[in-house]
Image (cartoon, rainbow, N blue to C red; front, side):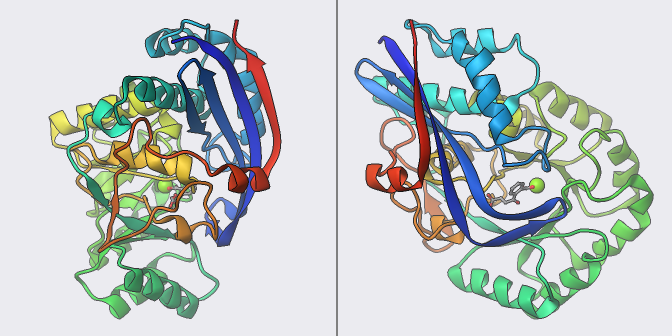
Length: 367
Ligand code: OSB
Ligand code: MG
């Protein structure tokens, strides 16, 4: 049970198509993987931070720095998961960096125990219903075309990225083209201000499941006003960074649904705490995504299999993101993706594929 080293691997992968949001356009992913190497097992974690600090204050090179300087030094040869979590808690923020190391340790320890991450977390589902997040498109025709292809693939819920000026009409067009029964929601990635409440209320006529993160990350209180002026449920993503923030948001009535992203909240253990809180209060949650490759996707599917995940997540198939994934690709079957059931996250990178995407690997001895 001795941890010998921790590897940081940097890699680069192209997306199948540019992904435009209110904060920018992503065409590729600069990846950071953490690999824990110990006696009898190894474990993999994927960092969800993006290249630039546009979605959140974290970015991938910053995560590498904080991992090297502060987080990896929290690990000793005989660390337990809890001892590392306790040591890392001394450092503020840096949720995505912490989550990457935690994920690798979770994979490592659950593999040693021969148990799947899904079982370890308390999963009750063997497959999860999958939605898809659709980027802002250059025209309404292009949008209808893209949505049509995802509907044909079988996705059970469509999420449209919106921003001021590209919101009401795209949503109206999708509703008209695909009908009232399609599960539809929007994500603003913090592009509005509370003064836009009346404008956002124009989305009410489209019977959306939710509006995700309309206001800036820090303006939790602004949502209290917004929820009174908009009938569509407000869901928070960026704002929810810890279970304490989640509890506060629910207590003050800032939202009625939460998007849980393990990377954004510092890991799967914290994600489960938010899930448990929401389940106890009857608040629906769903599993968000950060354009993960197979390593991060496998772990997200394990989380999304918990009982409180009653709304379809952004847990799409590998080919929605990448031509070639670093693991055996995750596939959509009748709108669902199977939850891996092997030990740990249930998948490992395919060495030749991962090597082809890799730019650097460095190993840090644990002693
Ligand atoms: O806000 O949910 C978001 C992707 C990158 C950063 C933020 C977000 C997203 C997505 C896509 O919406 C989720 C996915 O399919 O992985
Ligand atoms: Mg979001």
